[in-house]
Image (spheres, helix red, strand yellow):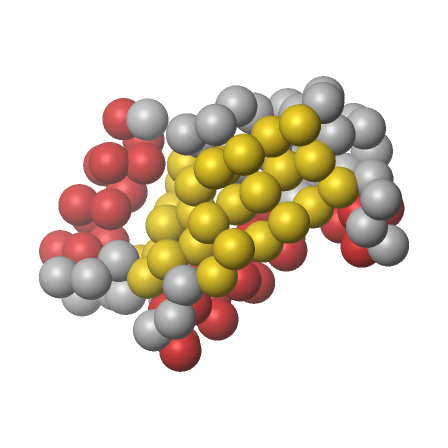
Length: 104
């Protein structure tokens, strides 16, 4: 968690806009638990993890969209989803991730 906080401070000091992704629900097997966080800046920087790698790409894209739009989003990934295999969620569970732009 310290790396996430350090990243936020560094990027904010540089004037970068930031989005935060947080695991808010899991069911079955999931690589990270509720509360796991990942932060992304508009410059393309990333710190933390919400899944150990299997959905980070999709969450990164959602963070960029949240930064641009200013709107939060709730993402759902699971093996029943057609997108689960596309993003690499082969662990057999479901993960809900809340993405929100960081406001000053």
